[in-house]
Every structure is written in C-alpha cells, then in structure tokens.
Image (cartoon, rainbow, N blue to C red; front, side, top):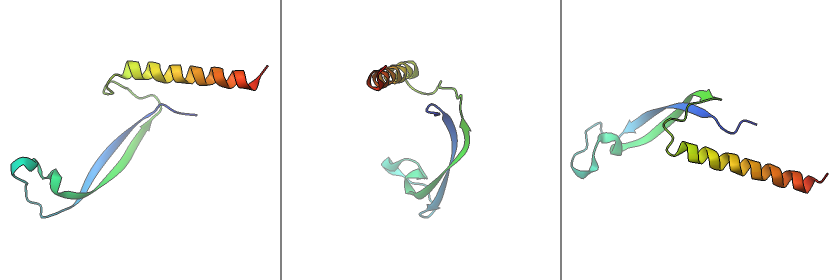
Length: 79
C-alpha cells in the first residue's frame, strides 16, 4: 500500500474571543483563538520533500526498516 505521501492543508480559525489583538508577551492574536478547522485540499502520491528537515536521512532509515522487515518476513515464511 501507499505509505509515503504528501498532503496540502488549509487551516481555518473560528471563534475568536473578542477579535482584539493581543499585546505584551503573548504575541499575535492567534493565541486568543479557540477553535481551528484543518481541511485537506490535496493528497500527493509523489510529493516533494524539500521542506522536510533531514529528509535524506529519514528516507534512508525508512527504506532500511522496510528492507529488514522484508528479510525477516521472508525468513519466517520458510522456503
């Protein structure tokens, strides 16, 4: 099955407390927002990974894990 894929999302913020901007150490008014809705707008079966930190290393780990799992599965299944 498909195990590596990408997706694009939109985040919609709802129910702001009073719409006023926060001040002081709290930063932007995003801290005052209570609810958010995440909408998946696209799923990619062959996405780009340029924004994934350490992607080459993560991909190597993933492929190694799959190779080991395959080897173990074949050894237990017998000839």
